[in-house]
Length: 378
Image (cartoon, rainbow, N blue to C red):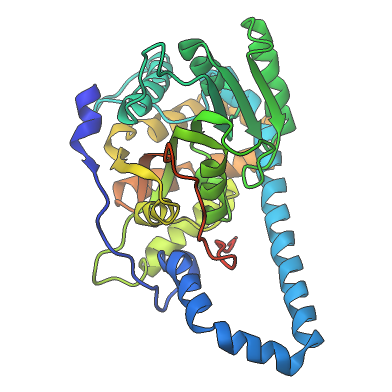
């Protein structure tokens, strides 16, 4: 299985383009580079404009900031409520790993095999990042960003005999994750709390391994998300991001097609997702932070059986009755599952792994523009 991950690996050497017309959600790189250009070229013009209108401009900026905060808070509330509703159903049918499995292309397997594939996803991700099992090199402190009910946290803590901290927006998930850790005798070794991944409650340089398994797609500010992952990583520490992206744009494209944008917006609406970005966008952000050993791979073909299997499980009597008891947010998410299948089949949705390391000796600095954020669309 290890060779499968290697065959689609690539080192990023492409260029980004400023997005043009079309919906702002998916003119992709415009969210990454345009603010840098604006800061450099528009700096003097902004100063002059501020001098002309004084307090009025400051009030307008405050109102805009308040509106942006409201949108972020609305998104985070929706995410928390979705997972408060749905985590129990997921655990009952699929177990405590709330993420895709890693499969041989073309395989068609049972739910028990899917649970093994979810473990395989963790192991393949660690292998891709070249994590060592050597007792002197293995991670001692780990953070699981977007931990769900703590499946990855417990697995990694046991595998590496490490201390692991998990954070989630869902109080239900945090409580259940701690209950499951206690049942495994992991109290004191593994702990969970409700916290914002964009403002992590940890000091700089705290963790040898920063783990984000399918949480990046929920982040409204991808630059701040990546910056926080890098901030809490220890010097020489490894960062692993496994996430959903949209396809990279070709050199002749300025944005995704209108049909592609429609599909992604419907998925966003169902799963409380902000704007998507591409793998290339993530790589550009990591490069801007001077992170090392950046590499990425498209694992879409290795997760292909997952969503059809989730749909089949939802259509069983057990799945249907569980959905009816759950709530509208969970039902809405279930109804959108065929859109994920369509997205994968059309090559629009990409399941991506991106790994890197924080420099061991260099102090990490950020040159990300303060104005950057991904707009939220519903």
